[in-house]
Image (cartoon, rainbow, N blue to C red; front, side):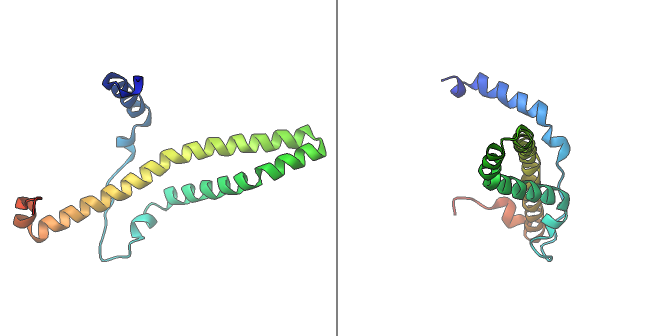
Length: 136
């Protein structure tokens, strides 16, 4: 199969990497383990708000789409029908954009917590954590 070939995988990876440019958009955020767990999420409230807004809008639209479509057909109105279809296309486009920002949000959060945890443990007991065998 074509998707199992290394050359294909490399071309796809390079294409996505060149278009998404994640490394320029992500940064490590400071994490204080003395503060509540949601502090890292609060520091990214723009990403979190956008993701929640799009998810809720998509869910409501997904539930009401058949009803709105049936209403447009029942009213025999092309304007209502085109509005419903246009809204659905717009929310689909917004939902796909949300995936990009969701990836940034999740990876930035996980990487920041992981980095700060490693930094903390290496300062607490550097000899044990740098020479520890994983077979134990």
